[in-house]
Amino acid sequence: MRRAELAQNLADVDQRIGVACAAAGRPRTAVTLVAVTKTWPASDAALLRDLGVRDLAENREQEARAKALAVTGVRWHFVGSLQTNKAASVAAFADVVHAVDRAALVAALDRGALRAARRVDVLLQVSLDGDPARGGALPRDLPGLADLVAAADGLRLRGLMAVAPLGADPVASFGRLQELAAELAAVHPGADLISAGMSGDLEAAIGAGATHVRVGTAVLGHREAALR
Ligand SMILES: *Cc1c(COP(=O)(O)O)cnc(C)c1O
Image (cartoon, rainbow, N blue to C red; front, side, top):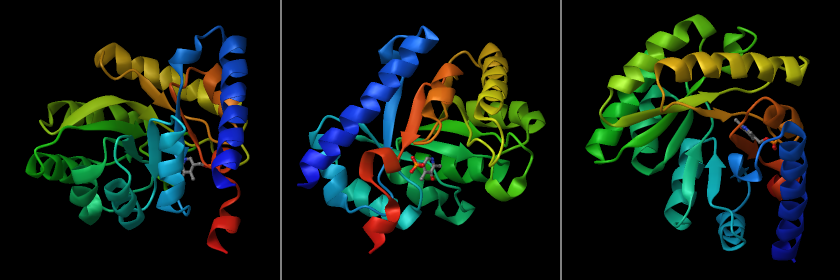
């Protein structure tokens, strides 16, 4: 049964998070599991909610909007790269947007949030290898972007997000992210969240201070199975 399978996967992931927190000398409560339900049906998202998962994520606007409408009572995170013309839609349903990496997107999200009479939490995505293809702002552009978000009435600056560069050592990558996060929080004290770590590297991320791990495969299974 799908519910039992998800419950077992959740228990396994929770165990991994707990071990990683203990190894890092951090309390288990310091890390929030964000389950990434992309490609899986809304019924899976509802099962996860019923199993106690409070934070769910999607990475495409259309799929995200449909699931956010169908599954209420959770915080919806948007973790994908976001086209500016879809920002207003996302601002109307997402509680947290993780991959904000340019000024035009800040402005569009702010307009959408204000139009929907909402306040949306924002994480700035940083590119740890400077490769623009995978999204993310360059570290030197973070202070300016942070000031823009902080000044936007519809948005709340909450911290940084990153994906470990392919082929790079995740410990070194997430260590760099932790340094950048400390620099941001020194200027913007409310911006102390770090979204980092996925199924394959959540331990390294927790070791480097991640407060939110975004886990898809380890909770829901391999996405090819969902698409068959
Ligand atoms: C899909 C996705 C994840 C989850 O990846 P898994 O390896 O399946 O855990 C995390 N973050 C982002 C931005 C994603 O798109």
